[in-house]
Image 1 (spheres, one colour):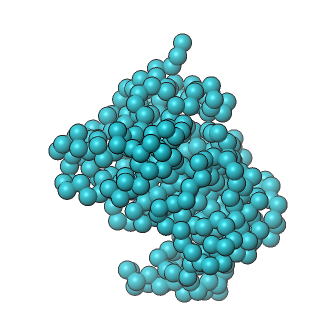
Image 2 (spheres, helix red, strand yellow; image 1 turned 180 degrees about the vertical axis):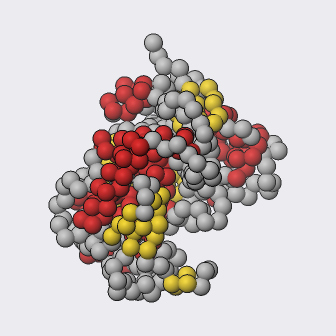
Image 3 (cartoon, rainbow, N blue to C red; image 1 turned 90 degrees about the vertical axis):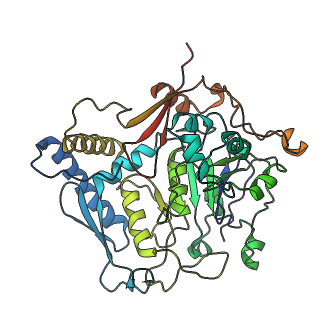
Length: 454
């Protein structure tokens, strides 16, 4: 039975209805479409992408447990489930059963997910200061029970957000080497992944799922308020409101808002946002509890009664695509071998070459000239102070329990205490933090420059 609790550092992600939790053991893009008309595409770029597609096709064949990839061209392919797959999942909204094949733009996907490796995914004061109408428009969307659709009174909005708003990113790209993202699929009951999960540098749990055997057997859903260990951090997925604020003021744990959420219907689920969060901090992302057995009849959670609301086949196909893009590594009881080496996943060099080729094609299709620098997708620029400066999150009316705790430790962590790879990445990025402007668009980043120390 999977448990996955360990002494170390922890972060949890919370929304009004759902919660992500991250257990930290250390102390520590746009959907582009080809333009109409003739485009002069480079033969070399198409060759690189076609070669990558062939390797991806083989990866799916080796790892897809019956899924197969069918190449359309250098960017597009279809993932198909085998004949006989029982698609019993009925979509009430569209009045159809879940299909057995899915078309993907691999060029789009590789640009999007490689970008997350350099992103900041926690809402900060510097983001709101730099984004056009960040305080007036965007901040209001992150506050429930505000009583207005805009922050007509910025001081009032700041009072709502200050409690969980750091000046600068508390977490950084490359901060952790290996991270586990643990979903809620009932397949966790068929495995003994607990120790394996605990051996990661960070563990991200969705929806505040229980981690101890008693909670699993009793099917107890541990809701807010939480019994938190001192090494845990909460990250709210969608909006803050007065009930959360009242609770936050009483606990010792750091609490932040997820920045990259799409605030509209049809937004990605918590599991996908967990992967985005992990990829923005971790070199390697292993996922557990995200799959369903072939021939499923309903989605199951390991700690509660079966429920619907997901698209299992669509999710299984997309996760397989992400694994063969080198984004995640899937662990499940459906895999024939427990110890896997992932040698059939395209190499980092091959992925980097495909990423560069996809970016070149995108620019040519858009009729753009110029270089391919690391800030090519920055739409808005802002400036902030050096690393470690600026106000920490908090409020004057916090309880002594919170006020005299170490809740702001991630915000005040010295640069020298970061993992070496994180420090090198920060310098390579010239002290620039990248944020999404809205959802999954590639070309609308908010980029905030911090002066590097001499």
